[in-house]
Image 1 (cartoon, rainbow, N blue to C red):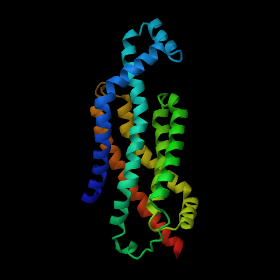
Image 2: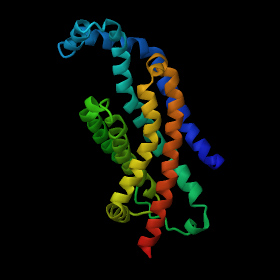
Image 3: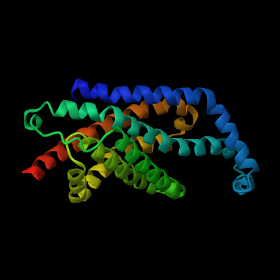
Length: 249
């Protein structure tokens, strides 16, 4: 990968890692204690605590709170990183790619702007979070942990990447036409990117070390995510800019 692309993957990783690192430092223990109290006192989860005691799994109760916290944080961290990459790295990817001869004379129709990108991202993220909440209970039922996250991340990746890649060069009408015409290919590309992202997710979510050293393990996995998302941006950029050239011919 070009050194410029490595930097574009490392920069959002640094930003997101700093933000989440600060949150972990100040709120990790507080969050764990809140979840422990919720499991013990809430009528919604008291049955779980009672069931573990009845089954003689009292020692396992110590892992329930970290497990639930990790389950909640993984989607939030991944989504926050994807948003940062979409807003900060994708423009750099487009600038790098359009220096190539075949894109040098591609007309910039300026069909998207910052406000449009923010609004589009907010809607896509809200839908994604809703999908995560609806499907989260079955994420840990094999093999759903390897199926549902790639599909959800793939859909969100497709939405964010397609809009931001075409924002500078395509008009709104061209963007809508291309996303409609190539929707299944774009979704497949997004899911493929999601599958690449599911590899660190799988080890992140199933390793015992994750629950003990989550604040540290998460930083390494975060950079893997960042590499995957920047690779996705390159892939979407080449595909959609070529599709835009053909559309205008």
